[in-house]
Amino acid sequence: MSIDTTTSVSLSVRDVHLAFGPNRVLRGVDLEVARGRTACVIGPSGSGKSTLLRTINRLIEPDRGDVLLDGRSVLRDDPDALRQRVGMVFQQFNLFPHMSVLRNITLALRRIRRLSEDEAVAVARTQLELVGLAAKADARPAHLSGGQQQRVAIARALALQPQVMLFDEATSALDPELVKGVLALMAELSAGGMTMVVVTHEMGFAREVADSVAFMDRGVVLEAGEPAAIFERAEHPRLRRFLSQVL
Amino acid sequence: MDPLSTLWETFFDWDSMREALPEMLTVGLPNTLILAVSAALLGSVLGMLLAIAGISRTRWLRWPARVYTDIFRGLPAAATILLIGVGLAPLGMQVWGPDPYPLGILALSLIAAAYIGEIFRSGIQSVEAAQLEGARALGFSWGEAMRLVIVPQGIRRVLPAWVNQLIALIKDSSLVYFLGLVASQRELFRIGQDYAATTGNESALLLAGLFYLALTVPLTHIVNWIDRRLRHGRPTTAPDDDDLDLALPGALGGSQR
Image (cartoon, rainbow over all chains, first blue to last red; front, top):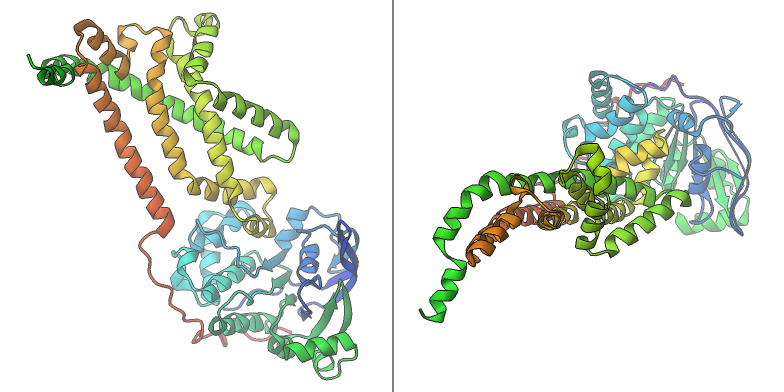
């Protein structure tokens, strides 16, 4: 049994700009992720990493620039349809607390994919098995640990067979001992061939799992390359300073 | 007779109570329930519409909802019931005849809707924005996200306040007596009042009061129970942190690159 990543496609972010009033959060960001590859985005808080992720699935509309999936611009697509193709995992999980774990996963399958109740439940159970939480199907999210909740959130996103997965500091809200399980799952997903953009403070993950790493600061990608190049041969002084602070 | 026993008989004259009891059970109680339950249903539906209008992004919905709420929350219930029940009576006469119940229920509903709308609105607005973002990220439209994710959570949070409003409705249903009720239309309060007026003894009115308490006190306990349950959740099983020994390797299949 394995997660279906045959649907994954390449992702390009080109010269994306975004301002909130006078605050220019993104100032021409470029990011290329080949099909089945994992890009990690690192950088100090407030550098625009999370905002960048939200412009990819258009939770926030960019002012300028383009986002391409499989070489095709998505900016003229229906945003709801786009988001069904792009899975997203949040720092705070954003599970629906008034529904069981199973229901959290079947909701979109039934309402958006129009699967029957039985089909949706079957898909959801398969996903839960893949993240090791089949036994928790009937529990409420609040009765799970943070790590378990995040794995449910990942299962929920994967159930829709996304072409790209976005992770927004997926382990930042977790107790240290729970981080490992979630990172292991993300690493498996990456190795399985999912196209992923991972905003993270976990430098170990970026170094070992990512195919490329982009360092963002003040709304631009200052330096990008293979993990070895970024972590061992950093050129930009701001990247060097950032690494010296976090490593 | 000493004053104390006079007082006792004024309120606790069993014969007066026994006389009023059958009519209260067969006429008054059903009528009070018809008024309160109908107005609760209609008021809650209208309240939900007001709440949605109140958080709408277009001011052409927000504004009327605001004005409506200010008016119906600001007027005395008795005035609203008279204005609608008497003012619209000629119109009602042509549609359903002289029965004061439809307009009475309408007036009670319109009043309740103003309060319930505010209760629902505050509940919906208390749901974290992240929940909306989570639902939108799955591909739900704004409307679907509200309907399936945000509104159900918001309503849950304000259930105690909503039940309080239902209690108020049960009590306010007594005010429809202003509209003139024939014998079979009388609700609990009116029957009690009629007996009290003819006998000069308040015991029947006290009995009506006991009926109201029998309806409202259990509801207040339901409120408290809901409140406790929302605060502490259901009996829980502690989360077991099996994250560390998770058997992940192999679970997700081999490399497909």
